[in-house]
Picture 1 (cartoon, rainbow, N blue to C red):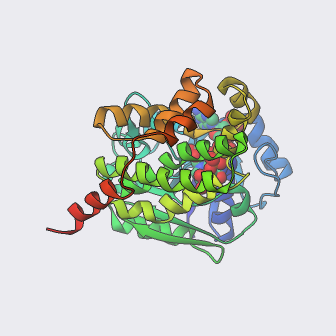
Picture 2: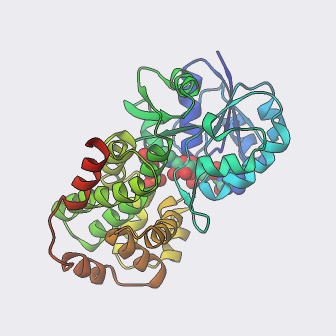
Length: 345
Ligand SMILES: NC(=O)C1=CN([C@@H]2O[C@H](COP(=O)(O)OP(=O)(O)OC[C@H]3O[C@@H](n4cnc5c(N)ncnc54)[C@H](OP(=O)(O)O)[C@@H]3O)[C@@H](O)[C@H]2O)C=CC1
Ligand SMILES: O=C(CO)COP(=O)(O)O
């Protein structure tokens, strides 16, 4: 059994700690809040984030050095805006070989970097090829209740991907491997923008047809961007692509869907974020994807529309009208070309 430090005691860090504890590992759940660590250790609950009881063998830590002592694995699960800060601290402390798996879903606006690239930049003695990403359709609320869930772990280092698969795999948590780090990270990050859109559509009172259109055309545009950045287009048809799109666009557990829903009902972004109290990664990632799409000259009409609603106060109904009245076109033209170019000579 392994000693594992899970960094980030929000919904997802807590749920993944439960999976690891169920697998018999020695789990140290690190939080930046001393009070939260004390509450978790004394009550075995993390009520702000999850209702379920936490197994007593999960110990919460506030001091990073103590959480990291002798661990073989670090699971990084803080919001993407905190990744640099936490890795910067890790860099000063970690001086023995560890495997780093991250499970955060976002892209950094400005630099347009994925989480594995941020880790690589902040950690001197750690190679990009060795980083593992865990992603897929996995609401923390369901994982914590041991409901059947499937995810993918990806790394360029096959041994590390298989090691992470072994670490997490159990009867309720089935783990696949992949070597497409770019596709797995981008699928998980970009679907959050489309989930905001699905929430907006529901908030406006539109029905299932509109949502199916958003999921399908959203998939087309995130695949287009991902492929232009080096991802395997087929990864977008897998768990971290279409799987995660379905789960976040159709579930009330999704914070991105819930935030979108409030926006669709007429609230502005600041009001919505105040009310959520948990991370809504799609907001930052929409900014990054908007910038990416214009720099790479990739067509992303849904993302552009959501960017306008979030940051330029455009009315959601106006965006829908624009999307519905875009130039007439063939459905599969660019995606078919993209796949043909990749798989034929
Ligand atoms: N929830 C889910 O179902 C899933 C989430 N994810 C991804 O996991 C990542 C984390 O999400 P999730 O756990 O849900 O988020 P939550 O909002 O539930 O929790 C975020 C946690 O991170 C902590 N935090 C915030 N800033 C810092 C910092 N600078 N240093 C250390 N800790 C910090 C928060 O502390 P505090 O309480 O003090 O604010 C809180 O404990 C996101 O990228 C998300 O997209 C991926 C799959 C599923
Ligand atoms: O990524 C998730 C499920 O796979 C969680 O999505 P939200 O951040 O929208 O809750």
